[in-house]
Image (cartoon, rainbow, N blue to C red):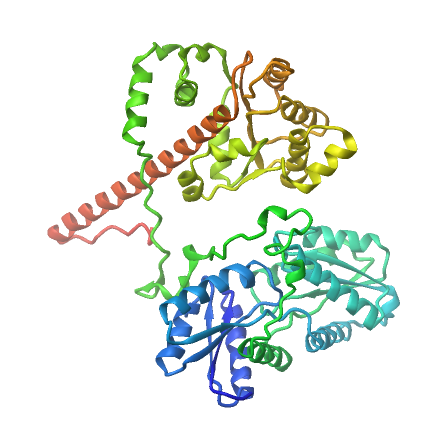
Length: 551
């Protein structure tokens, strides 16, 4: 290594102290090998120091060249979005310095050697002699929403299987991707091998690695006819330190390599086309530096977000005042009155109210779906465009439309269905029950949703079906109203349209925001009441009541 620069190893962070201890041990190994290059570390979430604090420390010590090395095994969201966004913000803050970003570890010959070492160490703990041809290698990855990173775990597994001579292999994940650990172990046992050896492909110990060990122990208890061995994770090892130092040097020299040809943020990878060009934004603000926020030796969480109630534009507010006064609303249940008023606002017509249909609890189902993080699926982009962007952004709602999904084109061509119907089928495949549907244009989309609900037992959280038109529209909406398996919102007749479906979703989003605001107000009121009680008791000389955190 030549030229003065500092290195910051950016770890993920954990609530488990063992995780941080191992990272700090690894940093010491890197310092022993880095020569004159200072090495610091920071964490993305939970632990302290944070990444920005670590970089500032190097800059305040006189460094003008800093390379941030993602302390993760594979390039997924943390290495592609969260950490680069931190580096970008720091570079803007310190324009006089040069802050570089290195690549993730990815697959490396030294890591393969370390995996071999861990597997041999596990095998020698057994009193039995079992050939590798009779052994199935089970590699457990972290699991991400990035298929490229998950694919690298499969590639690593295949290289170890062939290189070390195992009779078979299987990949599973501790979270996000499938199969999960328990299911993966069940599948591996069913393959009929005498032995399974389970390798957690993790850098450091922590909550997830401990869960993997527990899953292995439980599987061994259930399947005593098959020997199941647990290998250790990679840990603080000289090979790991060396790979990180190599990545730091490559980052400084502008040679940081990532698999951009299969990166879902750069190219249209099958199934992830909608994520091309997504902004690099960190998602860890709520737990950033959590362990460093202490008071009287106790860890304090960040204060909860203070939500404000929805405030309509003055013209919108006046419109709703006129709508409220424009008819007798006593015949409309309280639960869906506001949604009905928004539909009147959208259509400009009071006559639509008797045509509206809300199944019992439909609005509440939509509220719970949004609070539960379920995806809003629309049949056309016009519905998507009609959603209030500020609410979608503030509430963190994911919205997806399948009409332009490449696989929808294939389904349309091969099966002769409409693209809107194909998009609904893609939503069923992509999200399962973790979605709500907002259909405002295509009767065929409603028909496909009803078919999947009845034949495939699909259970979206809510189905909003309000298309406009004369061909098949009334029939499709009648079929939806009769679909008792799911909460649903529709109407009779030919009226409707994309703005109608958007309006109902907007009504649900506004209700969610107002409920969160009410909870914030209640919490603030409780805190103020507690402070008043404490002051009164202090004035009386009596012990103060326990704080909310203490109680």
